[in-house]
Every structure is written in C-alpha cells, then in structure tokens.
Length: 422
Image 1: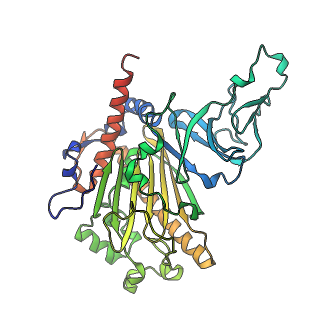
Image 2: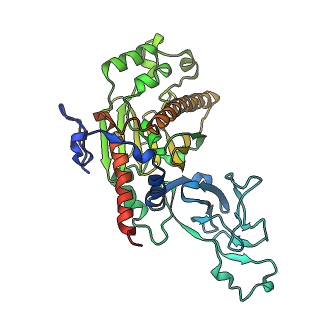
C-alpha cells in the first residue's frame, strides 16, 4: 500500500475503501466456532514471533514456549553450528513432553548438550536427531534416523525468532510475510537493547480486543488520565488528541505519533517521581546515542517524535520510543474469551544506578498502563458477549481496528475456501 500523508481535510479511512466506514461486528471475538477456525486459519499459517536471539546466548541454549492456540509446546535451541532451530516438545517414543522442569505446563530455559526424556531416557542432539534408545535391542527393526524430533519452521529476522506451523512449506518466507513496512526497520540497534523487563498476565478478553486498545490513541487522554499530569490530560481530551500518521501494508499496521519532552513541561505538570528519577511516560530523559535510525521510523517526521507502534499480524507489536528504547507486546489466545498478554521492555545496558532506576520507572509505568487497558477490555468482553448490540461504530482514528478484524476474517475465508471438501 502507498504511504499517505494526513490530508488537510478528509480521513485516513477513506484511503482504504475496502475497509468501509460502517459499524463493525465483534462476533469474531465471542463466537467459539469462529475461534476454532481462526486457530487453524491464522495461527497455524502465519509467522509467529516467539522470542529473541539474546535468549539463546550460547550453543546449547534453549527455551520452551507453550503454544495453546495451536495445541503444542515447542523447544527453541541454538545448535552446535550456531543456528536457531525449533522442534515440537514431544518425545518420539511414547509422546511424553521432552523438556520441562518440576511443572510440566510451565515454560523453562537452560543450556544442555542433548535433550533427554524423563520417562525412558531417549536422547536427542541439538539438531533433533535421536542418538540413544534405552535397551535398543528390545525394539523391532528400529531405525533411529527416522525418529528425530519433529521440526517447526523457524527463521530469524533482526534477532527476532519466528516460527510457522504449516504442515508443508509456509505459504510465504518470513521476509515476504513481513513486507517493506517492517523490513524498513532493519538497522535498528536491537542487539544493543539488552536491559530487559518482562511481565505477563492472563486477560479475560479475546486477543483481538486487547490488540485494538493499542491501535488508537483516542482513549489515551480519558482512560489514562491519572497517569498524565491533570492539566495535560484535560487539555488533550478537550483538543481531541489524534495521531498524525496511520499506515496499512498487507496484514500489518502502523500508528505513529508525536511526543512530549517532560523536562520542558511546567513544574506543576510533572510528577515528583519523574524529576527524582529523570524518567517518565516516554522513558529516561537522557537519550542514548544509538546512531542513525532506519528509514522506516517516524514516517510523519514528527518533532518531537513520540513513538511508532508496528502491529505485526497476527499478535505481535513492536513499539519504538523516540527516547531510544523499545517494547514488544504479544497476545497469545488461550480460548475465545481469554488470552495471555506478554509485555517486554528493552533498553541499552544502564551505565549508572540512576540510569537503572530511570529504566525501572519507565517499565513500571507501562505495566500500569497495561493493567488499565486489560481491566477495561475484560469489561468490554463481558458486554460484547451479551449480544445486546450486534455491531459498533468506529471513528477515523480507529481505522487500524477495522483492518485487524477485516484481515482476520480474510484469512479465515481463505482457509475455508482452500479446505472446502477436504
């Protein structure tokens, strides 16, 4: 799709006529039958981010990921050759989960030379080959070369590890799936952002409804009023805050907006903790020198630039902050009306205790924002399920919400057409 500047008159939505302007149904967020098809049509066909290479710092490093939306658990490992591979976390002997610690349903990580099943001690090397069978002579014509771990398609882009659960070859390579809007982010210093804060929460809402909350800023001056200076929130609400740039390309979306230099605000508009920690909503005040930024950032050329939120279909968000850090969001469905939300905040390694405290304040601030959004979305889910209303009106700022639900429906319809009669 072309890049459109915000016109002096008109709207963003008019540039994407296939999305329409009428009310939008949220039946896709409450219908159990749709959810079951969505799992196969979307999550077993799209590329899904499961982590970063920093989680695999050396040969033999591994982590597991519970993937309830596709009814499996996977092992992601760095092999002896340094390659990143992924396998279904299942032993070929009797189907036991291969890698787990005290609690079989919890994720784990570590370093090993091989994977050994807890049940009968079958062993597999880091490339997934079956290397040892306890009492091998008791089996009938066992060819170990046929019983390696079941692989999962795995590719890495800019340090982000993606998997794809297609039974055959994926319909697109990872790079083709990402497209130019995302690959234009290449060159961002992700590898320098190794100060990491992670949190997760079980949310009683459909995954798409929570993604919707981060695709517009129409709600920010209202829902998050207590997180910003009262005078600022009131002024923003009255003025009608709107992001200056939206973009849709293929299945992915972008919203970009200007920012606030907190230290330039009047003293009464700042919180005391922000002055003490030299940090706040937009992160630490001291911006690190990260070099030249990639061409894909700040497409509206905002000054000051606040953030770019890239929504990668289906369930992954990379959010870049103008102050020199980024965060990611994941929304992992666990049922039609529940999902696991994960937020991870990335900064450069702090050089002083003050820098560490500034990072922690920013990380805690965004945890609070996430809790506020989750609380609201649980209320939304409960009432959408009442089906008192069949559809809901959206404003121009909510064009990305239209796109997410439209794109999901398109993937489902494509899956139905390809599997009809199969």
